[in-house]
Image (tube, rainbow, N blue to C red; front, top):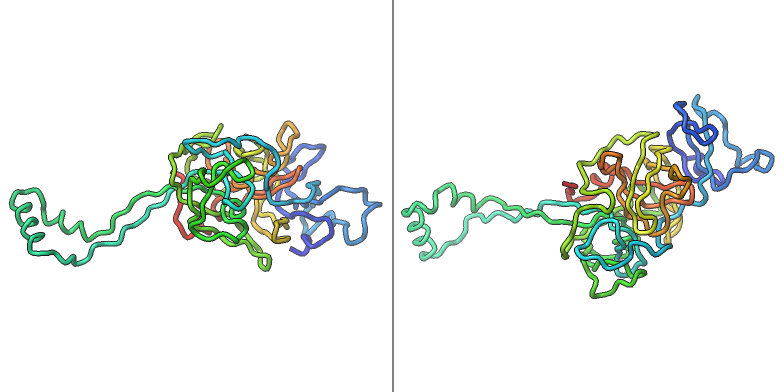
Length: 332
């Protein structure tokens, strides 16, 4: 993290050296900077060593990395049934992206030693005598039952307003910036992982229980498969977001440390996934794309988009997202 404190440095991660715009097979420590300048224009504190701990370094320009709030007006209409890849947000924020539908079992407490009236016991005896109720059926009444609930997966800063929200707060589709209002409530905030200014963060995530009809297919991607935890440098990540739609870009660094600007101020992050621009040299995300789920080329979730610049996009590893939530979520 010491290198991250240098003036102009935006992230530090493991990757492959880039030569003439092409990613090579040579391992390197990838260092993002706000702006690349000739060495003659750099101060001593801004100079990046060519080798760190026997590993070559490679510097890439990123611009200033910020949370992905709102910018442009795409995928912003009221959609029913609701669908991932569209505008969504806590009622007090502008707008972000509905990342994916995730599921969790809701357990109903067991009915232990129920107090039955004489009439109830008589009915049970009659049902057993008729062969309509067995002892095993009756015993099952003491076991917990479960129902599956559906949730929106997105960012804390999209669904929980950077820690300012309360569980149970309404979530609108589209988000307020896109014309959403009280009649557009589609979920209620269930849980979020707090973002800290005082400690290093790993995830910016939240879930909200859905109360509206939904289509689980992510626009242009489809129904998510089982998540994958080993995305590597050189692979591609595709996301479907509110602002820039569907984009696909190559991973340039993993296990990256970075600093991200929020409304609350600058925050430190570690263990992140960094992707570059698209193969068409377009930004891989823009404001309003926060909350998008990133997928590998086979449709497996690998990350949760939360920040970026014109040059790079930053994803939380999906394994960290799943493990950080108290609710045991799944994609299928």
